[in-house]
Amino acid sequence: MTLTAIMLVLHIASVVIWVGGMIFAHQMLRPVVVDVLEPPHRLRVWVGVFGRFFPWVWASVILLLLTGFGLIETAFGGFAGLPIYIHSMMGIGLVMMLIFGHVYFGPYKRLQQHVAAEAWPDGAASLAQIRRLVGLNILLGLATIAVAASGRVMGF
Image (cartoon, rainbow, N blue to C red):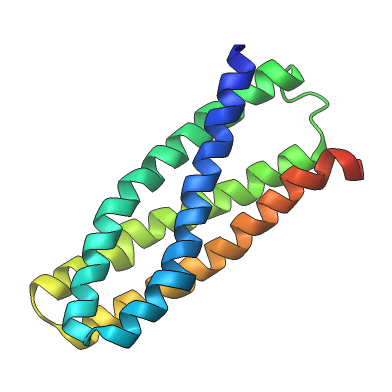
């Protein structure tokens, strides 16, 4: 297996972990947690879920950056003449990373503090902000996947 192939596998696996994890948490886990748990338990569950998921997202972000720039060099010979769809993927991906950084250092940190202090309404507000931003990142992630899957075929 070539270095380019290894980077591509790691790149795609990172996307699957990050975007797939967000979709699972937002669309499958969240409705069940809302239906079966009272707010204090619900907020504690989310602190635990994010505590396990966010290290995977950080690893994915690092791998996406390393493999993305590595693939630009090995598969495309650098930035000169890089197809627009690669620029689009990179741009959307960087926006997603900024949103995740904001979630992690902003509302997630506040959620942890509110749960530790048993400030349930404030914790719920932080969780609602996370939910909205994760929803936005899901849409951006799906758009990036669409660009990646169709960019070369569509010729842009």
